[in-house]
Length: 209
Image 1 (cartoon, rainbow, N blue to C red):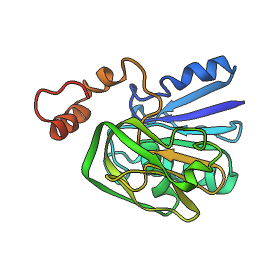
Image 2: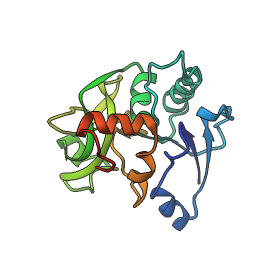
Image 3: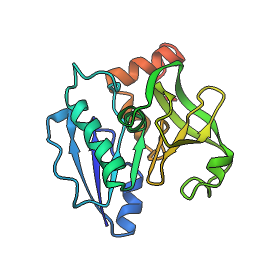
Image 4: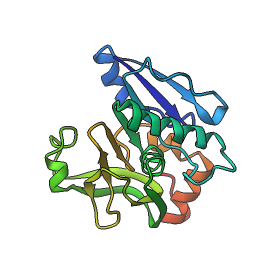
């Protein structure tokens, strides 16, 4: 099995998930889109992972490669019908690429916050084995406001309706971070956009959540 990843900033990578890939002997490659690396032919790969980043799905003038990325996601999920996992920005991109919509989260979700599996989530083959209520790392200012066609909400919370979704039978995504490592928060805290979002949400002087 081979996995390909879209990355949008160097510090947002598969994180702790790399350990499980290594243990299972699964190969993975990635393209750093913000560094100008082109999207290769994806057909040789079995799954696509799309990670987070400081940009928003509508920032296509500042980051024109988002247009090609959305096209690739749409082709992957709708035409090739292969497995997709999107985290944070990858969650928003899945919705946007497939005809859903995103908008500002009011308020932004930043911190270790509680989420809950929906009835659909409890029966899902990916999320179904997880605790019904759990805490997770949130660090996002955008949320999915309209589901794409064929989507189901798997996880929700009082602050955000779509905490995870499945589209069709092959695509899953969430705005929170399951790839957390011991140094994730400190690494992200030095990114100016992330540091500003943290300060806006939690107050001046916060360097961790």
